[in-house]
Amino acid sequence: MAKLVIPSLLETLYMVVFSTVFSLLIGFPLGILLVVTEKDNIWEKPFLNKVLNSIINILRSFPFIILMILVFPISKLIVGKSIGTTATIVPLSIAAAPFVARIIESSLKEVDKGVIELSLSMGASVPQIIFKVLIPEAMPSLILGITITIINLIGYSAMAGAIGGGGLGNLAIRYGLYRFQTDIMVVSVILIIIMVQGIQYLGNKMSLIIDKK
Image 1: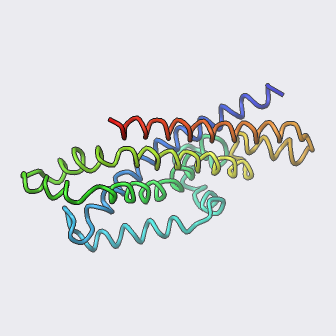
Image 2: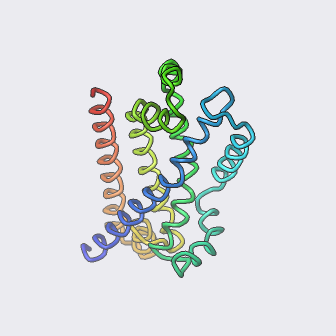
Image 3: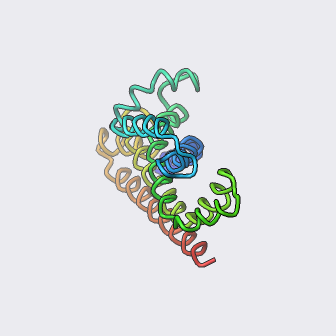
């Protein structure tokens, strides 16, 4: 069993780690722009804000399985194939990016506006307010948001196994469902639960430590 489970576990970790990185690279700037371009904010751009909101809402409307199928051509263009563990990172990243943007937006909006106004009165520029005020002040909430994103990506990666994405989801379906090997199904589910619990614990702990500081 170990010969089947360990490679699948590593595939899941591989997908989740890289899709988390790429979704943050896309979603983090989008989340910041959603906040700073709002009306009466530090870089007011109503039209840009409406466009970004529309794009993010459209992307979030697609169920992951459908989005994954639609993104097959993009996956093939980027990694040379549309199915497999590496190819799945592309739709995972695209699916998670708008979610990340909303998480970042929500966290940054929690920052006290008085702190921002004080920074403006002291002559701080927009980039300085973003990187020295907004992000540091929102860091505990941001960490919790990123934790939720990683957990969602674990769930998405398991769903991706249904259409050849690899990982624990693919293992559970191929052996646990189609070959009636219940033990492999149970082990796959237990490993996913352990991963989710471990990530949630670490996220909560890190957020608490930073909040105290």
